Image (cartoon, rainbow, N blue to C red; front, side, top):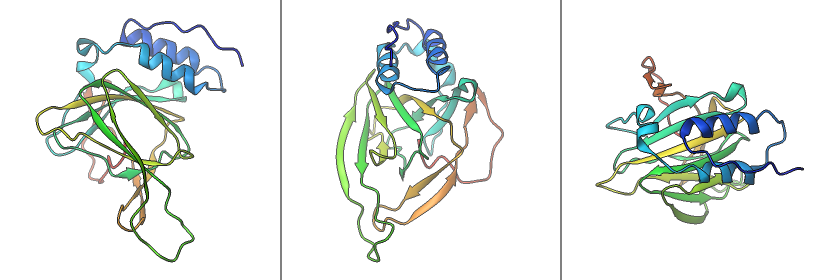
Length: 203
């Protein structure tokens, strides 16, 4: 497969346009997407209008719907906010730090055929630093993402391809799984109508 020349996006709008061009193809080069997202240098004045915080939980804020090929969103993590352990519904997941730091903990899939239920197996843990990009899919494992700071908020830019509306969350102590519906706190900078469903259990 040909490697397209890496263009450095100077702005968030540049990044979105380049991503649209990349995802016109049905064959996605993970390394290429990762490099493009990493080469964008976070500028708060460009993404601040999408960054909506909630006092009680992290928020998912849609930035671009990628012509149905991907969703690009900004997640806002208040002090101490975190996700549950979750999968990514057979999608690619790219996560770029725009501000602050997040801790990612990777887990093995629980054995669905095992009669014994116990603590889920932790594979690794790392701190995601500003402007760096992490990647995960279901073959790599499950993860939980947390803002461990009690004084600083964190903001991350996520790309999911293909987009998904549901995912599975997992109980760390038992491996028990639940299916949850994904919702957006805002779309394109505007607050979405309040939904009564419990959601935002993944990122």
